[in-house]
Length: 538
Image (cartoon, rainbow, N blue to C red):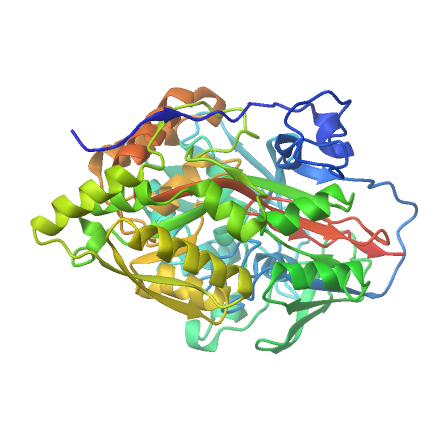
């Protein structure tokens, strides 16, 4: 029996009606969970809901203009196999250039065709994808079945994000004429369409990959085309006048990157930029309370201290992982880093989703932490830990807070503060050079994909290197079910996480992407990606 303490998480499940998601969840009053004056009538639970929030009414779209976007992080590359193609690190730009085969409708919880015309199945094993007639890449070549298979094949061969999940599940994919691709899976996969809403679903032109990864060219079939890129400065996209669908209203999109969320928000308030993306809880809650319109994406386990479980690392010993977990007080962490904002929680799921369920969680217990450290040291375990984080002020405060709590129970901690989120992403997911790292698992609308990516033993996107056959089996069982039908399996996964502690679950979180009142038409999809094809400015 592994050591852990257990208490019951107490986050209320507030399943909001669709209308509340759209209007910003105005509260009628009387709730004792208010978090202070000036909260705009919202509880914290209402802040962390999914969907488009605020006043989205608009008139006739206006043509022209440049949308100034401060993205959350810079893509390591415009090659979708060399970055994590989600909204945090460049997925917005990639979706604008390449489009996606499918889109996830965050309001309805369904998948809708985008570059594809349809995706159908009778048994969740054989999926038939039909492409839109007349769709072309920006170089004039057709988006046909051969191009789609070539793009997905390139994505898989070059180990793009989610590739382990794809490779383990796709038995065969073949053309059926020029406009149809048939995917045959090894077993039922209920959320297979999610894989085509980002990553592998971002279709690159044959000319883009003709010379291989070293000579990749950003050529796609999206509503925008690549214009220019200055690393760490700006990425500019221009309207694709040969786009197969309704032409983009904007002339251009200019992506820039500001490291600190507060600085992004200050730029938005000053009117210097049109759209930002933030996840720091203090900034997120401040902007939500202020009534900004935007897209809110709540996530479970959105603040996580990943523990490197790999051989030769201190975290290989489960007692060390449990001790780290027991040493850290999530509420103190939020108090010191986020001015008390955020929803401290060891539960790895967000209350915003219908599959959420309370479980017994392994919580803050410094006496247990000291006991485990003493036991592990006596057996020769290494209790010296390296912690990596970013170099902005909030991240520095986080690092010092974690260091103090760990050293109080007997660990020795060395801090290393990195330049930006891109460098940290590389250390977490590529080189694995860390003992502890502040990050996230970000479990959202499709828990299977998040869990398979982050904690399945063979996933290249498994930051902790966590390996447990029992967890793999539970994730395999989850694959064939929609989340609402998999609550028991999801609960077992949550309980095993509490026992094994691949990382320290700290809080529910979310991404909020607010925009100016003059901005309209931005559409959300999966992985916190925003679609700009219908966006326009007054």
